[in-house]
Length: 492
Image (tube, rainbow, N blue to C red; front, top):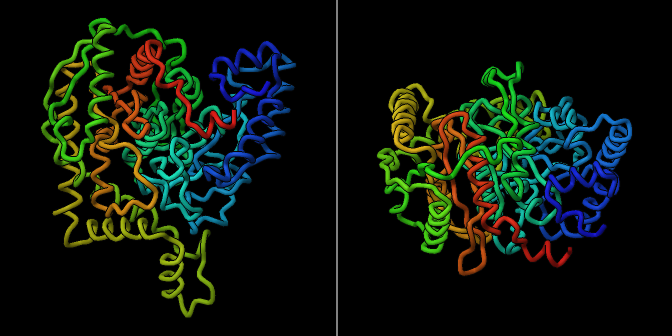
């Protein structure tokens, strides 16, 4: 079959179960596409050909023995922030270019246990710091919809591999929008779960109180399949919640749209810099949801102006602490011929970290310093509580909250946006991480340049199943999620 990459996860699962094709055939199909197309997209850091084929053969043997799960033998791509045993895990950084992980992250291990086949590790902004995937040590990944545009970030590689049909689905991490924004830029569905829903064990840390792993795929249904594998309590992660996992696939039609109250924050639709085409596509999608039975309710989120300054104090502060371990002594990059221990520290870190990572370490170290800790970091944590309370008050009136995922469509590669402009692009996503809430981005159309636009739905705690269900029903009535980038169609 030449069109295996066009199948949904359900169709792949059913095809494997009916022996229409084997996992080896499916895996070889994707590996051939990667070899042909990825030199243009540059989404993979490492392609694990031998590992993938060995896992595919093992999956076929399990299926022959009648021991297969729904996902046994289906390929997946992992963001290069998840530790993978025996495979380079770089976090997109020169600092970890030589790091071979001795263990698997829990998300990776759970995927293996479910029989998923690892195609490789995909590109990302260095240490997940960025919104374009341009800060990677390995160069910029390109948006399959327009190769001169970025795919978003930091999970830009995860978005690009799915959008170019180089993997059926992918794992990502979201610290301030890093699943949802690239999903929006690449015309995909991406879910950021409630903080604590998916284990962080084995994820290279950026900001520990904000980081959360989640699935990226074409549709809510495909994301639900991967969430069934990723979600769950992990004793190795002290922030993981011991809460029963729902069957996200079985619950895709569990939420009725009839009477569903969707909150429309008036502050979100008056943000300076909101592109007119993005606003129009989002409003059209809300009208469609209204036609399907939902009720739109205008709400106030009064803390909106505090999102960006609060996030960009807390996240860099945690980053400066987490990245202090990369000192040229224990593992990772080490400067050559240091004159003394101080020279070793200074040159290992200045040579090993890129500009954006250094910038955030400096901001965070300043915010945590003795004279400024209370004035900046502690105050930001207090404002964070107010942001959380603002959302909880809104959820007394509505079931979900709607917003654009990003104020614009994908930027051009090399666009001369200064760091502050780039940070302001996170206005709609970062509050979700500050509050620890779940949120999903889904494709809802295109701008005048045929670049994808995303709608974001934010839910109350532990409402992943509801969010997936709402988007699934929207996708049953629309076809935006079935649209494919030209590079994928040309190489079908």
